[in-house]
Image (cartoon, rainbow, N blue to C red; front, side):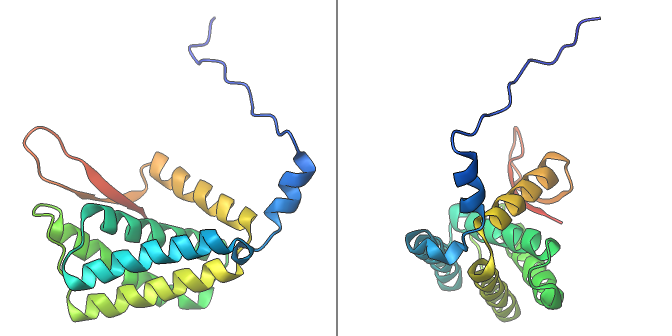
Length: 167
């Protein structure tokens, strides 16, 4: 009996030792990457607080929340679970309210919760290594692939399209 799956060869590493050593390097050693990431997430939060947030800004914040949750599951910041939960729930509510109109407006309690979530995200990235980030990304992708994510959908006539976050 013939299988219907297409053959996909495994990727081959050109420098396996370099890959292992690179995985042990703390993420803050990559200054430009950390600055760029921090500017993007905090600019998205600034746009949200000023009432100028776009769907791209909300997606950036949701991606930061996804990464924080994945790092939390891997043991980074276990004592801040309440901060993580309230921040994710606040972000979900903001995204859900603005999904139809693309006008994302914060409430005061939501702003505080999301700010605390971003502080947690920044602190987690300060202590994580490249390998930890790779594993966290793989965890988020697995959650999305296995449909274990809570979706924020837009109401459209023909189809729905949404932003997601892992539970």
